[in-house]
Picture 1 (cartoon, rainbow, N blue to C red):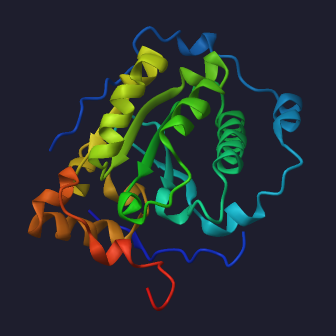
Picture 2 (picture 1 turned 90 degrees about the vertical axis):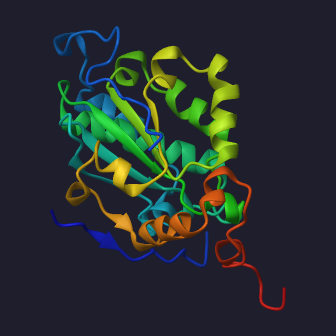
Amino acid sequence: MELRIVQSTAIPAKAADSVAVPSTDAGAAPHSQHAAITPPEAAALVPDEDFSDLEETRFWEDEGEDVEGRIVVRIVGKYLPAHVFPSDHVERYIHHKLHELFSLAGADRHVSILYIHTECEALNDNPLALLSFRTIFHGLAPNLRLRVGAVYILHPSLTLRLGLWLLSPWLSDSIYSRVAFMSRVEFLADHIPLDEVDLPAFCLEHDRKLEAHPLLDYGFQLDRAAATQHLPLGL
């Protein structure tokens, strides 16, 4: 199996503990009941906001399929430093891209979201805060929400795990039940064939660090190299 690895995208100057994921959505309506977004509706969803800064980062890619045949949306948190991209700007862009994807894919297609949290905790500079997860999913129409089959989180930190658990009372059960934490790339491969998604090179490097320093998994040890990567010179 060919593993596709991409180098980290530069940020523009501006601007296994895997949780089982059901193959079908519990309580979801049959595909025939899913209302497709018509072209006029899709056009109305395109905002006037300029998203060219986010397009340049390539944090979002939607290609390939998981083992259930769902379209994979890959989101790289490290490409979204908060001092460059406000969280509400990122949330609106993700909403725009999801609606666009659902419109083009057709009413019978589902998606899976792969959120790569690798090194975000050490950087402490990522706009996709915990509340962003709730805002993004609850901002979708109910029929579109049902078409998100799974949310895979690669290299989740202890803070992210606990935060999502604490936030779960304010998330719908159907959404929270679809979250699957992947502490290693090899566990992710059980759900998404690795030749179906572009993983940044630092994901595999982080896996090697975890093998050498297991406490990084639980937040008890700081990845100093990642934490100082974007500090100003002289600090």
